[in-house]
Image 1 (cartoon, helix red, strand yellow):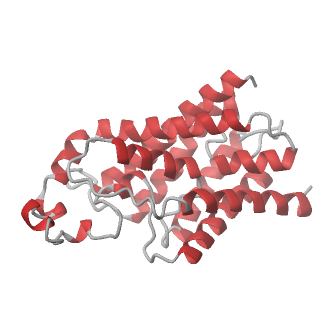
Image 2 (cartoon, one colour; image 1 turned 60 degrees about the horizontal axis):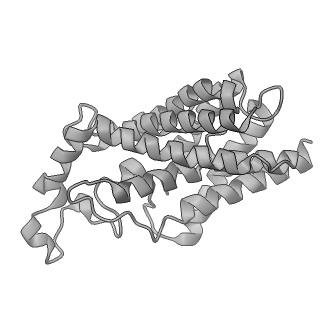
Image 3 (cartoon, rainbow, N blue to C red; image 1 turned 30 degrees about the vertical axis):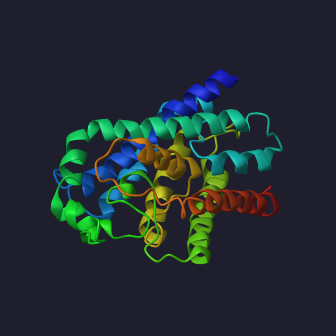
Length: 264
């Protein structure tokens, strides 16, 4: 794979991943959406199908890493770090493009949601600190969950551990069941297996933090949330932003280490 193929494949694949994954979060969250309040099952399966779609689109070009944690794990496994910066660049750029496309697709719903007093409270009372329930989470605006993750209980050690554990499960599954014949990305059957693993992680381990398990998936859209001209969007919760970046990278590295010891 050439550097240009890797960059293009990762950019397109990660953009599709975030468009569909962030899209299901928007569908469930935004008040004027037909899927409003569809629930956690819809989100878990929506993200799983997003992974599957993105993998099959990008695998012929880049091997469909779509996740810096996967890229780091494969670099540790193979000892080849030469293409890591190219993968990272495509993954983060694609994640930002995908998040921006979610905003475009749901533009009217974002506007309606964020100008609704039941959602964001009254402008006159906000100055005194009174906001609607959906806008009360510390550091996070009422639609931040469409773009990036956040903890239900804010405990840095537990939140980090949750992300490490979830990512470990994802990466060990990729390394043992999902790689193509060349071992440098996901294979045809591996894409389906990985998608189902993501659904399982969401259902079983997603409750505490929203299961980022992918630094690009969280940081790229969080940056877009900070930049978009959304009315009354609130904060982007930068105090928490390091957890869904550091945790998945640690989880991926640990999975690579265990795979090298136990399976190689």
